[in-house]
Length: 391
Ligand SMILES: *Cc1c(COP(=O)(O)O)cnc(C)c1O
Image (cartoon, rainbow, N blue to C red; front, top):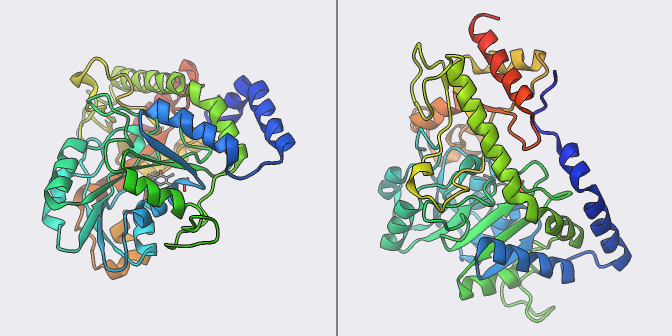
């Protein structure tokens, strides 16, 4: 049996007719950048996310960069980010010559540890970027209350979490001041190339986002501020319009797959329950946990499992073993920001963020895409059991 980490062809086959028609329609219009397709897509996302404004942009990274620019982040400002995330979360801060100030993560959710934020705030701190990592919301209540106390802007990195609800039912990316999303093809909602979205309920920020997407021009060729080219292609918008109505169905399937993994890991004696944070005899595999599950009945998409991350001691060996069994896995993320060469000048050292370091050394993403069969999931868990028992 083969179990790839992701198989986008299966999803394409189920929507082929609609997607092909949408692509051809753009070709026939010869209207390629922004324009009516993008505007219509933005409307769809406003109503799906229940947010006042949304803006199609060129990628998730550009969504974050544009958000920081619109928020006025400049040289020597400080922006608080978790040390454990995809590179872009911190990279965009440095690109504006501002300083990423790092925090550790919560060992259960792997999201920013809100208790590690306040002590890192200085007079220069301007913003916090919580990441809704792997498809589960960060602890927004605590983060927003700290932000209000110190007058900081909250920019949500929801690149892995479109469709995720917070415990009160609101969509992530609409809770802070600006939300940033990615439609990179391997995300839970992907387009046919690079694409992203920024969202806000704030009129002033919206104004900045809107004009900075096109070099800060308003009207065209008259530049009040400096922006960039953060435009989205009409083709990507057309693809996203076809896919968006299917997103909640895919999230359901991802969640069902995650539930099956958990059940099987427990049945195979590889774990006792979800959300354990320390290895022992009865828990050689640490399972992810959706922490908001129990809190509210109206919240269905409490976790959309953009990734399903287990933790394991001999991670690299297991990865190789699973590859030999034709099972695709990935390591998100092997090196936290404070240990990255390019951030050496931030002055952190190994040991500064122990939880992130432990997670980075032991995390492994298993296949979780919606079209997986139960038999494939069973095969993955069986193979991990085999590895544990010494092959
Ligand atoms: C994917 C991702 C991004 C960047 O998105 P791109 O569309 O690839 O530029 C930013 N943050 C996180 C957490 C991501 O996973």
